[in-house]
Length: 169
Image 1: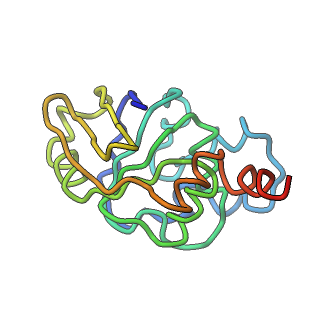
Image 2: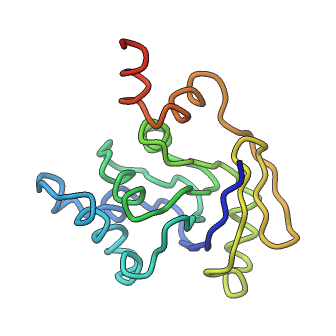
């Protein structure tokens, strides 16, 4: 499997769940489209309007720190984002991403390269082979540890809910 999409470079560390999905919407009942419309609005107000199906995000370290709200994962997924590539993730965000079938790719070298070359790379096409553990920014290729074991099983089922449905019949 190979994913291709445009890259969104969020050149910052510690992008927290309130920035990814504003806390003021936490207890609102929104449709998937409404949730997507608020994705990253406090970081980049134009993100939700311009993101396309299949796009991927590159960020720095500790992506998704803050609360355990799954809306910080699902709003990106509903917006069409297929993967978040970061130098590192907050553990709960990483797990929530697997549970919601949004690829969390931890690759410090790719994060550093993209952030160092953000002017040339922003919104350019990248390709990701999540099962082979490879990211390509043009000719530049980075390796990462792909999901494996139970995490991969949950992801391939479409998330934790679908995985659980499959297990209990």
